[in-house]
Image (cartoon, rainbow, N blue to C red; front, side, top):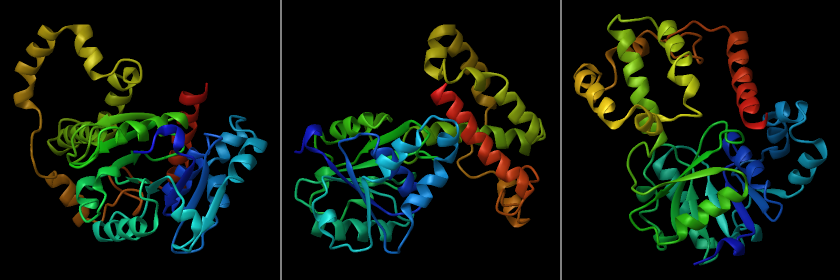
Length: 311
């Protein structure tokens, strides 16, 4: 198997927003040359400059650094380009479609080196299923980057049912070398780690609104101004140890029977879908949104993440 030190050439398969951001991230290691492949011509530099505008404007990334990192990114629409054949590691970031992903990896495996590592940036799809038709499944892992990919530190590295010992660990070393915080998901389960945690919270939040306990704004206010504030410093299991196992048991023994445990999406979500309340896409979901408010929400999120990570 290829060692961390042997990995120098990175291929990003898919030139959309996530692919561009991952390409930028990988250039944080000055030893990496990055190739971006897409079926269609795309302006990778323009996309990266748009994503990183707030970082450059805030002085967190200098213009000369950005220019140097962009100089190590090469774009191609030719699957038979030598840069693809010679890559040490590929991160796939194409559409969330099982057939498309499987076909993409079949083409890559036929062209890339026999010791190349394969990574899929799927947020929900099983890496084991995605890799099921490959010959060398032992060199395949999931690498779930979180959006916005150039800011959120976490990357979940998911072992498939065939990943060889050491492959996931080497991929985690690569990710650490570009400033990411990789975490190992030992089993290929739906939702991996963080999405399971996130959607457990979403399920309860939606249920509270559905049952008239509180409205959406109140639920979000409660989250933001209580445990949400301390989560970056004191997470769930640390907090359990802080209050003690006995108190955790006592609370769960009392409250868990009353917490939402449905295995189906909330009827409230179905009602919203039927009413065309699609969130940002339609201008209304749990809240009503103008385009100005949508733009501000996105910009404020990036500004908050930059403040948290760089100050």
